[in-house]
Each structure stands twice: as structure tokens, then as C-alpha cells.
Length: 272
Image 1 (cartoon, rainbow, N blue to C red):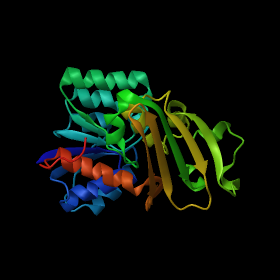
Image 2 (image 1 turned 30 degrees about the vertical axis):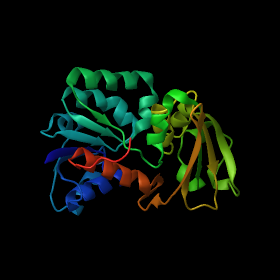
Image 3 (image 1 turned 180 degrees about the vertical axis):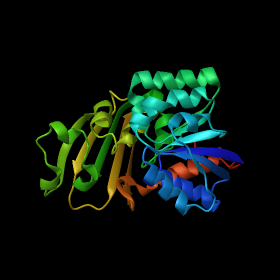
Image 4 (image 1 turned 120 degrees about the vertical axis):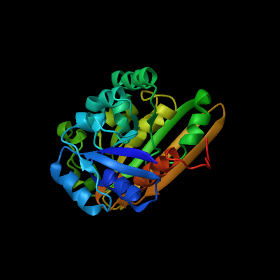
């Protein structure tokens, strides 16, 4: 049974921890860390099998676990991924947007090679990545249209320099159009799906993103359109937001749980 460490005890991290604790995943959560000690304590209080709360990320990386799940932030990936790999731990990364920084991506690739470790990227709040990966050499155009309630977008870096006030949006409004590279930087907590799509397909500069703020929706909707010499396809997902964090779709958590279950010994593997 794999021993798992958890970096980040927010909405997604807590749901993954509860899934392990309930026996849905054949693993044991033994160590956790969150920048907020209150978050760590609140999570431990919910669990039947109590993990150890470490004092810092370094101690988490050095703990006797087989893999660490990052469910904290893009900054956590930038600051801590090398230490985790150097301590010879496999990693599941939820804040995938950090990998669109070429220097961070190179650190991850080099770390996997140098320390013979694996990094896992769950499919998050979208479907169709197996198709994108299968046709990536024949892709010519990939577009992602994401629609969310303005409340789910509040706090994004985009609004620090924009004239748009999310509280004053009264109808469906396109607030951003551009590359996935820029979208992930401006909406770091909202658009990790763009990073996944870029890594699976034609890259972050060529992958186009449109973000729509719609005050009348209660879903997080992602529509992917892909075209190339193979033909074309489109996929649309209307996600229910996570009850504990509207910035995150419920599907993102479920995808992470299924990915971890596969890592921890599911014998039947389906898909590309």
C-alpha cells in the first residue's frame, strides 16, 4: 500500500484525503502540510486515520512517503517541486499552470530523469485529453472556451490591471481572449485546464483561450475545439462547482481521485 503525503489542505486536497481515508483508494495518507496550520488541523480532525502534520515543506518532502500530492498553488510547484523530486518522491501536480513556465517544466523533466521519479497530471475539469494526445502531431488549431460565474473568477490577477469589475458584470461577457500561456498567468486559480490542454497538444502559445464571465450560470463550462489533418472534434463539459470552492469544478477532484486510484494499483487501465 502506497504511503502518501499531501501538500495543501484546501478544497481539493481535503477531498482527496477523505477519499483515501474512506478506503476508495488503496493508499495510506501519512503526512500533510499546509501553509495554514488551521487548514491542516481542520483536515486531520475530519480523518479517522490521523496523518502527521509536518512543520514545513522540507520535512514533508523528506518524510517516509512514496509520493506527494500537490494541491496548494502554482507558487508551491515553483518553490517546492525540485525539493520533492530530490527527496526521491513521485508527485501528483494539481496546479498544472506552473508547468507553462519553461524553467519549471525543465526542472520537472530533469528531476524525473535524474532521480528516476514520476510526475502525474490528472485530467482536471475537462475530458478529451486522450484524444488530444493521440492526434497531437496532426493538430493545427486548439481553442478552449471557459465560462464561469464572475464570483468564481474574483481575485484573479487579471482584474488588478483591468477596467472590468466582476461585481458589476450583469450579462454574459467575454473578458479575455488570448494564449493559454497568458491566461494561466492572469487566472492562476481558474484555468489550469488550459495548461493541461497545452501540454497534451500544441503548446501554450498556439492554444487559444476565451474566458466568459456569466452571472446567470451556476456551472463551470469548458468547451474544447480541435482541428487538424486528422479531422476535427469538439468536447463540452458543464461542471458543477466544488461545494467548498467555486473556483474549482467537482470533476477536477474526481479526476484526481481516479488518477491516484490508478497509480495505487488499479489493474484495469482504460483510455490512451
